[in-house]
Amino acid sequence: MKLVSAIIKPFKLDDVREAISEIGIEGLTVTEVKGFGRQKGHTELYRGAEYQVDFLPKVKLEIATQDENVERLIEAISGAAKTGKIGDGKLFVYDLEQCIRIRTGETGDSAI
Image 1 (cartoon, helix red, strand yellow):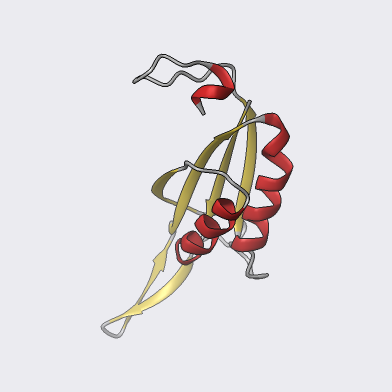
Image 2: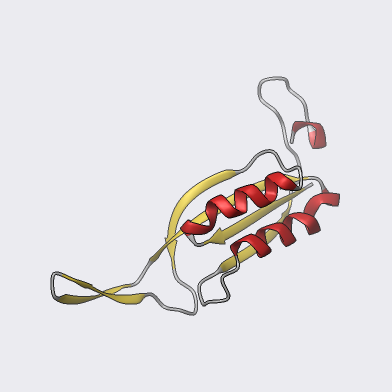
């Protein structure tokens, strides 16, 4: 099992959700986060005053899946989240040792 974590632009969330639904992935966790990478934030204008925004709003997705689905999941997220501009985000893939469905006690792949 793997845990795929994706940091994407907030306005791409619906596109990514639709893309992963199309490949049969049923569940994900979404967290609103802030951060920066190479873009190092940006400047904005508010009431005539310019100020520096160091942390940009992003969305973090966490998706647990079986090993055989990882490549399709990565392609779906990458394709749906890509704008071709700086700040599109990152994908991280972790080994997932165990998964337990609390309601039924199922473990492993069947709990995902």
